[in-house]
Image (cartoon, rainbow, N blue to C red):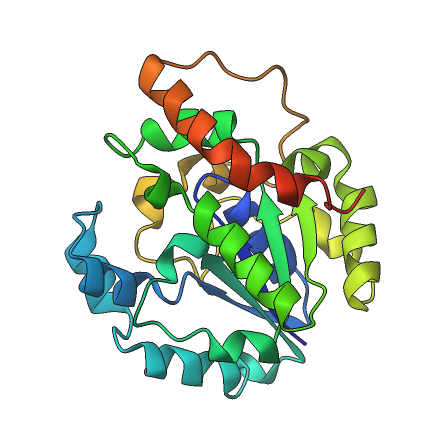
Length: 238
């Protein structure tokens, strides 16, 4: 099984990669289109030069890797993807050949967390618009992609991960509930900037409390994202 997990930034995506990566039967890859995205957009992300040097910038080469032999000859391949990376010029034709899951998080939490690491983010930067677009594309093609909310996973990691595994026809493995402190060998080169909290973790963080207080700019960003978040939230796995 090849799983494409689609999320925006600051969305429990790295913890989910660690969860699947803790299984002996899974290989993982971390944001394989990041270099291609930066090369085509010219965006000045933290560690831009290191990211571009660390991965293929040709989307065709990335797709060949995603659909080719699974690293380590593992039975399954977990692919962590950022929806905002799927810009014009990066083919989506391959997506129909993998099992697609959409990982969502309330826009207020994303706006607060991402803006702490990235200056003046826009709606395009946080992936909500692209996430819904990808979901609708798959629905139109006849697929039934799964949606899972990060808040539900943090509230009940074992229960939600069991339901997720059942939904995609994957056996449950309790190894998914914990991982070694300090990161994963397949972390992207950008990990030192973004992954500090998850590197200090050995499992999923507890349930989140009330929504954060937002600045005026953060609130405007969260409000702009809500129309793209709500349709996915309504069909999320419970």
